[in-house]
Image: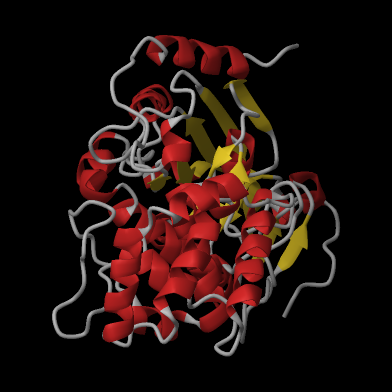
Length: 431
């Protein structure tokens, strides 16, 4: 069977392709001459499947879409404290090239505006790294996000560096405030090379999916940056990624995103997908007109908004029943879905409000996709307390979603592959 997803994406493109509002970025000659009618979209899942329609392999420069990925590299290379000392995380409500520096310190408000992005570029790699090696570290890092080697478009670089007067002014202010210690000309050149990397929507979707996948590239399996770095990066994307249109974007679309003045636009939906669109005509905020329209459609059609109310946590309990009779009688609680704190609390309450009447108790995780650390600890504490109350506890975990199943002092737990094993003599418990 052929997947219907590319057909859906083609329909979405057809719905917006007649919108010719907006204009290409006329302040950079190489971008001003881009074909304004190009239009493409790619979706990449966190397990490595991609779907696309339109101009998915048309190359264009990454521009400001590089900013969140370079921010992630800086956090990974220097640590949170070192980066936050130089670059803030507050949304500005200003355009991307505004002079948005904190009074007194001169620290840029966030890494998504140009001032913050120039400072962030200088924080990649170790402190004594040369400018040339730092640029290579940036290219290698963004290539790891994409899953293939990315190259600089020298024509775009030359076009941009020849008109980078405002960025040089920002870099001079950063140097004057001692936010950066590098020659402003050098830092702007490095930042401009970063923005001149050539990508396609396929590349960008995989890069976004790497963020959605907790920092692990879904195609290569390589961890590009740690999970806690991803959380920080996505948070800043959500509040600052769309500049002075960030609030409108978050209420209408609700996906951490970043735009670029070449017409690219990405969104990363944690745990689900990365999405990239390409259409060179920009609105007054510098965001792709048709790209924004596409993301609004995706949110409406697919319920992608981060603030979309999820299913009630009561649904974590699929059912509760008794199996067997006599000494093999077992009280079985079957769970489902992804367990987070609220869902785990519902499991705790189930045993508190309805204490098991059988000596043997089983908790089935057969339909649980994942559980976080706090839900793991809560579940194992339930096991420990049931053990202390005199129960023999079994966990049905055929897919191994419960890591390190040690219930701690006084706890006893037997892990089984299926409910059928309940009626068989149990293996030695974990104590």
